[in-house]
Structures are given as structure tokens and as C-alpha cells.
Amino acid sequence: MKVTIENKKGLTKDIKVFVDKKTINSYMEEKYDEIKGSVNLKGFRPGKVPKDILKRQFGKAVFNEVLDKVLKDTSTKALEENKIKPAGQPKLDLKIFGENKDLEYVLSVTELPKVEIKSIENIKFDDYTVKIDPTETDKRIRDIAKSQPRFKDAPDKTKAVEKDLVVFDYVATVDEKPFKGNEGKNIQLTLGKDLFLKGFDKQLIGVVKGDNKIVEVNLPENFPEKELINKKAKFNCQITAVKNPEEVKIDDDLAKNLGAKDLNDLKKLVSKQINDQYKNSLDRLSKDQILKEIEKFKVNEIPENLIEEEVKILSQGMNDEDVKKSRKNFEEIARKRIKVGLILNEFGEQNKINVSQQEIQNEVQKQIKMMPGQEKMVMDFYQKNPSALTSLRGTVYEDKILKLIKEKAKANKKEITKDEAEKILKKSQSDKINNQNKVGENSSTKVKTETKSIKKSTTKSDKSKANKKKTKKVSKK
Image 1 (cartoon, rainbow, N blue to C red):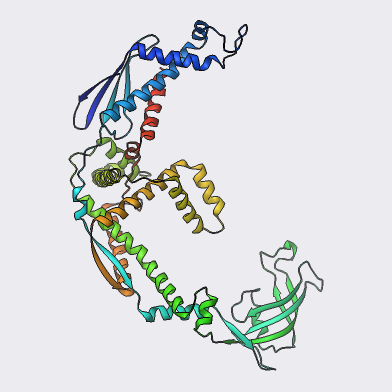
Image 2 (cartoon, rainbow, N blue to C red; image 1 turned 30 degrees about the vertical axis):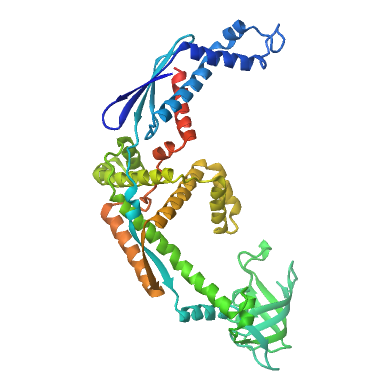
């Protein structure tokens, strides 16, 4: 194989590749030997078909398949050996090809620019820690305690009031007739919450233990027996207990009921929970600060084809007139996106950052946990949308890069209160909305470190796939 590089304008290069016919023929011979054992032709035993007959029968198909393989292998090798990272798919132009001929083609490539990342370690960003006031933790525990009510038996003849717990058995009828599921035992209702049937528990106010109370309510729209929906049902209730709410003591017993070792342990857990709620949002602010600083880095030239791709993404759903009006603004946004993506990818490559399949699965599991009851829907989504998994890989890749940058960069550590955290986050949200309105961006203009074209240049397999797609089109001509 002979490779000649010709520099064109800017980042554009023409890579001329020549492969002699002897090499092509050796590929052909290998392919014929491969298929020989599996071909069945009338009059010949398996594996005994003469090669000249194979050539007459399958020559064109074998050549097309060999051409695809040679183009893929040689183009990938030419790019790797000359350390050229293409920004998007190279254009392939076949000059000479055919059976028993030399192969000559030209790859027109827009190369990714060289980027300097040494100054990444000089980036400054705010690293927040939220100091949780003990009173805030105590307030949260009190709220938790209120959601864990306890009840004690009311004195005899005590009439039930709102917030009391009434325990009862019932037999229900509609038009004096029983129906499926018309009996209930040991039903417990906290009066005032109206959680059983609408208007039911209000009719239990004033009952005492031992009472027999008739409650009449309309059966709801979601009642299982469709023919009884909206019909008035009569519930004959036997009151077995009335219980008064008891103040829940905030002590070790409560803590143990909530899964902690003791009260002190519960306070630590709750404090961490409050901290994490703010820390995650504040970490996103730190990430945005780093990305803003990276935007200031200098990259001599941004490939025009990448800018065009990003503009298309930004203008999705817009009419031609609006796209034309926003074109200049979109191009500026695209340049920033691509520049940040190039720098982060270079940092990731130099630090050998990779994303394993296990990390992808872990991220999918996180999303599943966030959507209880919809686990199958989430799994089906990723199984049917490979592009969604690719996007997820990009998110994990970005997070790993930014985590390492944070370790290397200069953190301005700040300990703030919960109130200060809320003010910072509120201001950040306000600034974000104002900036979006100012530049005309929609909510999807988040910086992406791996645009489609950049991702194709980061792995061998991606480059091979890109070249394979192109060669298949060419070989059919």
C-alpha cells in the first residue's frame, strides 16, 4: 500500500491510497478458498468445485466483498499511520478499481484540529459544601415523625373526631343486595384524610367503640364492578375501636424504626440527605463553570462541516426564514460547543479515559430506579434505540472527564448554608433563563462533549464503520 498526503485548504486533506493488483488478487484468492468448502454446485462434490468455475459463478460478488474489505482496511490504516483524526465521514472517490487491476482511491478528509490542554489545570471553579444547621436537621426529623403517626386506645365512650383512627368491620349492599367484595374486616381510617371512599370518613365523626353506623356513599368511577359505578352503596359498619393520635417521640426507637442505629445516626443520615439534595445541583454549577472556562480556550480552526451539523441540530423544527435570521447566532453557539467537545475529548484521550459496558449498564439501572413501575419501558427504550445508548455513553464519558478535571484544576472551596445554596441556585436558574432568551436558544442547547462527528473520530471501530458505509455505496456503482 502506498499513501500520499496532499494538504488542501485549512484542515482539509486528500489522502491518495494505491494498492497493487497483486495484493488485491491475494485477497481474492483467500476469499475463494474461504467459500470453496461451503459452495454446492450440481456435478461437484462439496469442496471440489474448480476455482475457475467459482470465479465465473461468483466473481462479481466476491470482488465487491473484497473491495469493501480492502477499502475499509487500507483507509483505516492510512488514517491511523498518519495520525489523522477525521471530523466526520471522509469522502471516498474511487479512481481505479476492477478485477485483476490495481486499486487507487482518494479520501477527502476534514481533520480535527490540534488542541492545547495544558492550561486545563489552571482552571478555577467554585467547589461548594453545604453546611447543614442542626436546627434544619431537627426540623426535617420532626416532619418525618409527623408522617409516622402512632395511636392509643381512646377512653370508653369517647366520640371520634378528626385525626382520630377508627377501626371497623363492614357489610355493604346496593339496592339492599350484596355484591362481590362487599365485606371488609379491621378497616382503619384516619378521619379527615378521606382516603377510603369520598365522604365516607366524615360520616364516622362522632362514633364510639361498639357503635353500629350506617354510611351511605356513591361508588367511584374506578369501582371494579362496572355496573355499580356511581350507584349509592349502604355500608353497615361495626366500630371495633376508636384511637387518639399520640405524639411520636423523637428518640432512638423512632430512629431504629426508620432504619438508623440510634437518634444520632438518624441525624447524620438526614443531614447528609439534605446536603446531597443541594450538592448535586451545586456540582452542576461547578461543571458549568469549568465548561465556561474551557470555552475561553483557543482553537485555531473549527471544521466547517461540524459547525454545519451543529447548526442543523440547533435549528431543528424551525422554518427557513427563522433559521436564516438566527444563522449567525447559531454558528457562534456551534463553535463553542465543538470547541469544548474537542478539548474535552483530547483531555479524555490523553488521560486514557474510557467507558465500560458495565458503566453504561449502571447508568441505565440508575434511570430505572428513578422510574419505579416503568422498568420494562426504560429497558425497551434502550434496547430499541441504540442511539440513546450512544448518547448515554457520551454523558458518562463527559462526567468522567469533568471529574478528573475537577481533581486537577484549582478548586475554590466554599462552605455555605442551606439558605445561601438556595439563593445561588435560584440566581443561576434566573441567569440561565435570561441567557437563553438573549441568545434565542432552546433548552436543548446544552454543551455536548461528543457530537456525532467527533465521536466517530475517537475509536477505531467508529472509523471503520464510517468507512464501511462509504465503501459499500461506491462498490455498487
